Amino acid sequence: IRNILYCNILLGIFYITIFTKMNYFRFFCYYISTIFKYYNIYFNIHFYKMVLDFCFKHNFKLRVTENIKIYNFLHEATEQALIAKYIHPTDCVLDIGGNIGASSIIINKLTNKKFLVVEPSPYYVKILKKNRQDHQANFDILEGVLSKPRDLYLHQISILTHVNETPTKTKVKTYDFNELHKKYKFNVVVADC
Image 1 (cartoon, rainbow, N blue to C red):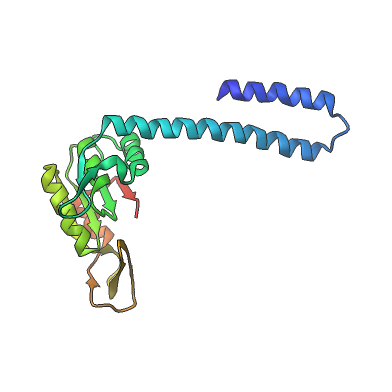
Image 2: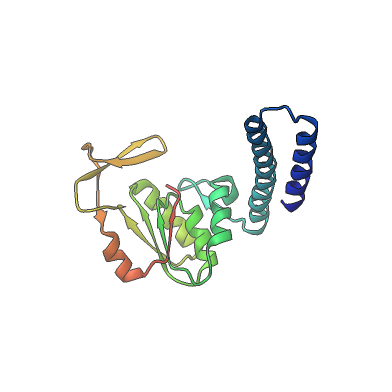
């Protein structure tokens, strides 16, 4: 980044000396946008390099249905790479929206503490349990959502799920965050839901 900023400063001095009659505010805005454009390109290159490095280092098979397995980096690779970057071995994690467990398995590989995964969909809880068993992972699964006590219902359209107060045949259990925190002592919350 330092080299990019130095080049932009020199470029800015060049612009000032050549275009002295230019509206300075417009010039300033153009100059700042140029800096951020180069910074954004730099950031994106390094971000995607981090994701690719993650994919080569942490790859495993993951169930997406009861009978179909894929490599984990084909499902939410960016989220998994960020988890691998920021989760530490001593962290106690609350994983909200566990889905099929791609993030949960990575968290398990990175930490040495039991943690908690919350998922409201009975279908995904079944797959999550199979993935936990396949990888001999050490996390608890709660089928439900974190919320104050109230009537909530699961809505599922194809593979997409959401929870709200409109009644359906699938009522969702609610759990109090503070009660769970007393038991698990979370210091990190992962919410890729």
